[in-house]
Image (cartoon, rainbow over all chains, first blue to last red; front, top):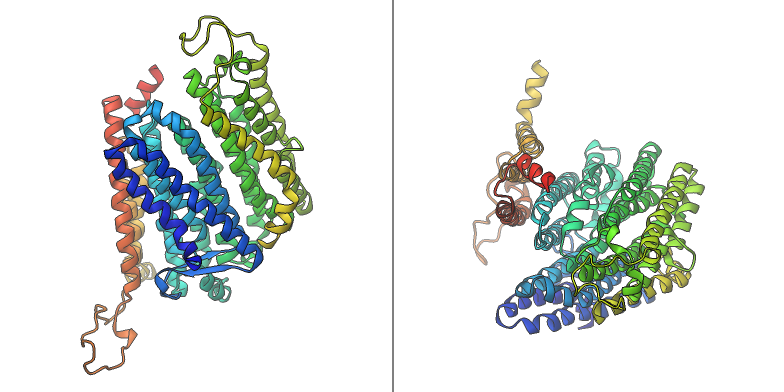
Length: 494
Length: 131
């Protein structure tokens, strides 16, 4: 049983997803507990796997007993073990928070919703641990397809936004597939470890260089890196709030993980970081992403849209940090994957609760929100402080590593962009705090059931409040234990 | 000029897939109708499938099915006599993925049509702007 854990981590959510879809037709009540099992079990397994990786070395698993290069290998090292735990924790928290939202928004589609989210998580977990370049493409598309369907479940303009995302996402995945095809053409293998052994002899080949570029372009489209970020704001702001914590917190982060994995495991640093012109060009691209993301966030009038542009800026942080190409930069980038997943989850859960109660997330409707929803706003403020980078929260530490890396690499433009975006974030979040805390509650704007007559507390349901508070606490815990995280896990990534 | 012709003639499979790929990209970027965009997307995916398929081919090789059955006259297999089956098998999966993508895309297109009553992007955009 113990040896089968790497396979079970994918198979459990996959099978539960199918079961839930069927059970959803029979009895809606069973969907939520089943989903809880389908995500709770892999979470426990992933924690166990990470501990085992920390004790021993890399865990490899051969699917169906077929040895590579014939069979597909699953490979759990420090980096993928860490990302795996993050994926399942975020998914479980979002699941608990989404229960009431699903009941309110689409009770008749509960089975479909939970089934799709489990499929989505199974795909992400597969992307994280697979050691086969083509298998990664298939899992990428499993994740993406369930993501498109989840986004399409939203109302208003969601189907259109989902369709645009689908077209962009398919172009991205196809470019990745083309890159893998080029690699296969040159080496005759798809196994990542074997590729990394065979490629060094071919590093001067133009086909290999183009293969790397095609993979990178595909992943950039998938992670909404600056010039190709157009699909993200609409898709993320129109999708149902129940799914927003899951998709917004995980998709871009896992894609950045894939970029790091392809660059470090398939290609080696001696190939990736050798061309300084390319590296500085990508860092500059990240700088532009950070600056434009921050400025566009400032122009938005609703909370969710503001957060989507913050995500685009954060993608710039992580991509830029990685392409600095030194130890601090990559540490900061990996640390920021973990932290940003937690921060995005916290903010999207809080905004989800606000949207659940107010039926709106326009900044102008938020007056008096601190009085009516105090606990949700505590979580929101902690999340905001972490995005800004205030010391006890985790956002400070990853930004610290990124800035240290930027200074060591001599790319002052990146450091300047980080500080500029922090300043913009201060404006963004204190504007929300100002409206919510100091503006008096306007009378008679909303319906009676959304604004209580006495102006008392009108919190979101317990599940949502507790999950947003847990995710807010996790930001502080992650911040305090950053040393442990970097010393025990992340330093072995390199 | 002669060099160009030999270049195209000797690698015509790559040229075919590049042309298809550009056709698909063109349709996705330029066409205003959402279904035409989706068709462009499918052409784009198909071009990559064709690329993989053509990679597996070898000159004077046959399909990778071993003629003798188990236990009878086991003669050694010469890999050079058979085309490479792996890219073809990979593309079976990729075809499934592209069919699934097409299905989801068309389902979303139906929902878009119900919402706006049209599939022309400029008309949808003007409807959104009016709100």
